[in-house]
Length: 387
Image (cartoon, rainbow, N blue to C red; front, side, top):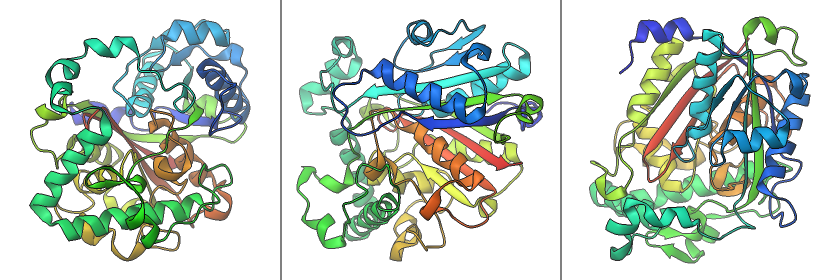
């Protein structure tokens, strides 16, 4: 674990002043991934009231930073292309904060753009990954299989019926939030528990509605110094806690399929922020699958291992429930272009600013955004505070 005294010195050293999605999200066959990056960047900088010419730090994942920066017309003095799956963009926030504190840059831009739905071709580069040699021959072919195997282990340890009910609670409650989000992909599609249980099988024990969407989308975040944030169009939201890390690549090498790395990054971020779980008003958790949410709540310390089904029971995380969770509709029902973590932050900032419209929660002052990448491999956690 990093030296906590040094991390606490970073708490509040940077603020998020702009967030946005691309102009459209969903099925966009006429837009390239680079265009989605550019739209989101333009919209987030507009949100911040900062021109593109003043960006001197640039971070992204999936593309080389120099490819996207060239497309955007940016010549950054700090650049970071760290990629650890869907957690990457949450982790980038900590990297940007450290760079700003060190004086490498003053205005950092994080962007994501991916045509997850319109471009379904598997990248040739993936053929050389260890998983293609050691797991694919045995039928572990992509996240639905690896995550479902992890979920099956959880069922074995804590009960199949309890786990199934928890997964259905998460799917139904998340859809209710999406029904309140005018840009969510599933905004017009209600879901009942019967709908969930009757949806087709994907990879047992996952039904269709246990699995995230596959969409085209982009998003961006603008981060700067507290001093610069004072003149931003909407002020700033402080980054007060961060954590990042990973412990495996292949699912077969995960020591315990029910204990993701959030067990380290969550407590670290909370300690750095000087708060406890009960202080949080909103929690945004990467929901690649319903199981991801269930096991993440436990690993982050909201409840003990095996207690997740009771924690989410009776639509506790739905609109009107006592534990607001994934209020945008999440990767399950809002959008998921392939790497979703950045969207947890976009929604958290909007809720902290009071900009979430019909789904706005009351008195939102502290929020956690948490990303997961790979095969439950990496996690990034940030704590955000309204100034």
